[in-house]
Image (cartoon, rainbow, N blue to C red; front, top):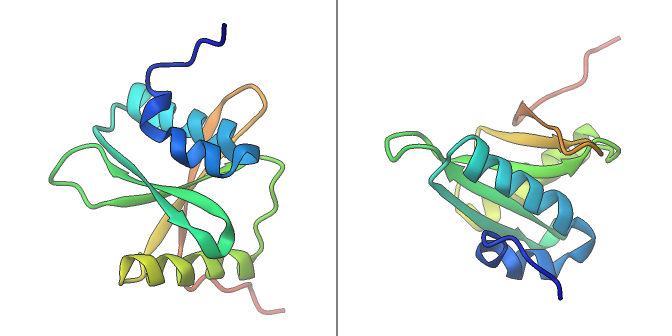
Length: 124
């Protein structure tokens, strides 16, 4: 019999929508809710890029943050990051100034990097 973590039911629908990303999504969700003790974490479906983004904050008075669960092996170009911001703006009705990439390694370590909108490559 398969035993699921009790917190799985909170994001089961998101995990089942994109099963290939379920493990990394659930790992980041657990890290935020259990390890970092964020109390307000929800999923936001960004259909245009076929993934879920986590929306949350630790305390009520804090600003909402957007977290993109991703594997360390996944490639993020400047164009892909900007598309993420554009698509988030469509579903949120405003463009977030930044998102956090939650980069998960094969040993379940999660490292968070903040990326700001409007990032441009250096000129040569």
